[in-house]
Length: 196
Image (cartoon, rainbow, N blue to C red; front, side):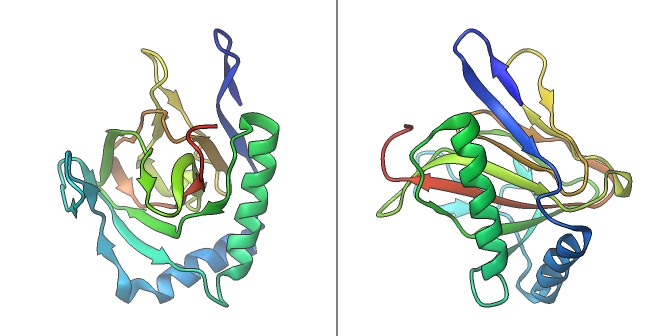
């Protein structure tokens, strides 16, 4: 956890061992079974309501893990972890998770600095972003998740099984992977009100 002393704002928090090694394997296996649905990530086009592939900005392969009988346990566990971390550190009014995005960063893949705050009609505002580390840190090089809250970005732990959670308005990026593959599960937490 990192706290901005000037405003008493918690910038991020990390939790370890929310999932066992067997459960992390199961998450990867579920995504691998869905790999026929793999696609290249799209990004929002500025001043537009559309999304498109912009490799200079984001190059990542993704699989959407929708909530169904095989993933219900995963959604419940993540939501409970997020509720606890939010209550302890952020205290946002939150309602639900968006669909889970399984991301594969291969060599050369990256995501330039961005924020995740968007408003989704009839669902609410993105308030928190969370990322579950599924790869062991020895399986790849580069691919660092960095939070840009000062001149020196904060580098988030690459330890397998770590959940990093932070307000969606914090600028962040993923540096290019230089070797191996980085696998993570990403989602966003919504709330009906503004950023409260």
